Length: 162
Image (cartoon, rainbow, N blue to C red; front, side, top):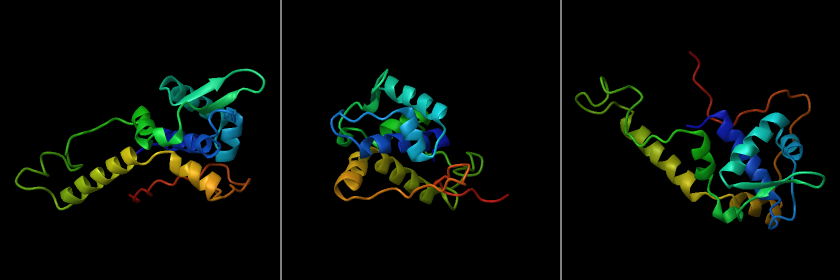
């Protein structure tokens, strides 16, 4: 559904949304990386891509950093997703045309189409405002990552064992 770059870019954007105050608070790539348990060079690369897309703005030098380019309510998850993922508007089944649709759709076809529609709707309708509100107004804080952990745990669906 989405890759590691998308997951991490959304993580960086949610951190910027959490502290959003109209651009007064700037976070460095190091601040974001430490808060989200990511590698600083990787976060810098993601922020560069997000900046080129007009989703974040950055200021160099002492006291510099990054902030959202627009209010969090005006930035959707889909805008970030579309920078790192390929849009596929087809209804192709993962089983391929030789199996699914040769006579009738495969057993999973309708479920997969419904899942694709749900994901697309969620990405297009969810804004980063939800993260700002949760953090600033509801006081919700992400769980702290244990320092012993070397890699950030992915929250994507687990892959089936082969």
